[in-house]
Image 1 (cartoon, rainbow, N blue to C red):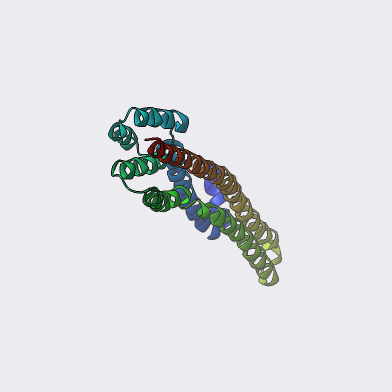
Image 2: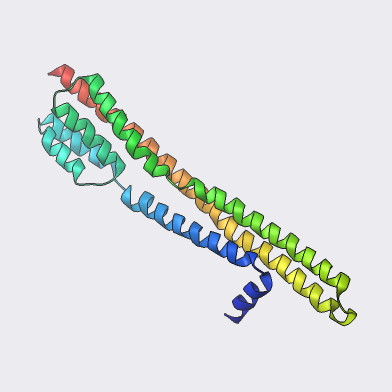
Length: 211
């Protein structure tokens, strides 16, 4: 704890700005990870199999209820398709309704993830700015300082420069890693939703043709 306190004290005012950036980044990481790995978690293959089996048995309402029990975006989109199919709407109207639901649900999957890339750059640049100001204050102090104090002032200036750089990288690197991981997960989730919704629509349209 003493080391951390000394680390921040010697780093100067930019340390606290970077710390604020890190707090915001951690909040985004936790919220997005929870949403993508828990709220969006669903076995698409199992759900689609259950839904198609119920539709084949003329239990469209039960299939809709099965989807409605879950909060994942995929379940919401499939439930929309089933509800409009049950209402007897045309294929084009069902497709439009599903597209409308997807336009509402899909942006929520990628929401706020882009902030992590921004915060990584901000943290790194703040560290660089702290480095520059630390070196400037060190050289300015050396120009007017007593010879006996020059070594101390130089050490303080270098400490400020190095500490802000270190903290900026400590915050920026995890932000970039989290940005990459969460972006990949979001893309995979969207692809799964697109594939599953198309498969269900094709199945529903085929069922209507065969009747």
